Image (cartoon, rainbow, N blue to C red; front, side, top):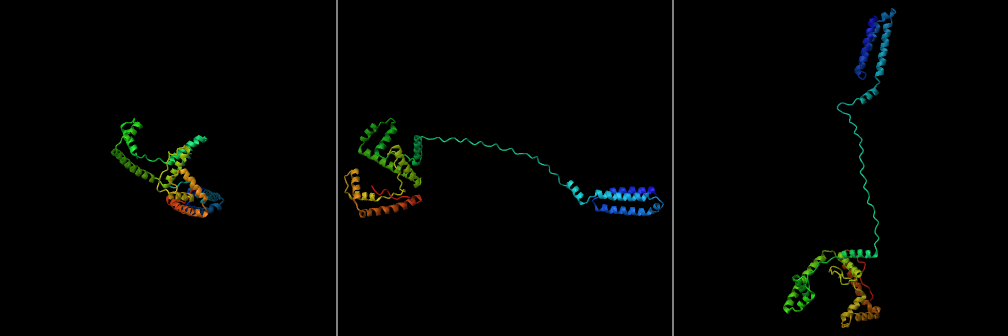
Length: 318
């Protein structure tokens, strides 16, 4: 009987320890084992009554041990979750941690050293201003010879590069009327060609650019003291400035013919004195002419430069 009880305990222990702890089938098998042990304890009741309770006691201990062992190993959903977390899913491989490579910082560009501005002298400032004005003044295209003398000189220069002006002068004086007419005809043709080329050159700029070029030329005349070096560009698109009341009076006196055969100086002094002797009523007609002329100038200025004019007339007194 003792041997049989010992064998039953051994079998029960193997069954209990071999059951899966996380499946429902394992729980059902455990219940079946316990029921079998219960029946075995009833069958061995007679042996217990004879004073040999060892087998039943041992079996009860074994049953309790089995339950404790099962409860200890199966800790519920937490253990299942922990185990599930530790086991990677099938079909997925653990991604290898990419090495944390630090990017090398780009070398900083060195800032160029700021050079101190050179302080220009007055002479250097004047040279810089002249250079700027020459660029704004525009360079006109070179024209062809426009007179019979210049045509003859250019023709003789092509034959002899060492031509002296005295030789050309002697040759020009010796021209026959037919030869002179020939050179005049060539000069007129050159003039027409030059005027056409010059007109196209002027029209290649805006009226505002021509106006700025003329302002630069006026400034260069004063700086270089060369009145004949920079003549003003004649552009028909430029609005004609309005005349002052005094200029209208001066022109009326010149047109009258009373100032013929007078020098410019004498004429100017005479007209100036006459203007100063006029009454306000006598001056009013010239003031009205000047106002009308100023209105015309403002209209022409806006049409040419697409902006309003800030002026309109010259000085109102001599």
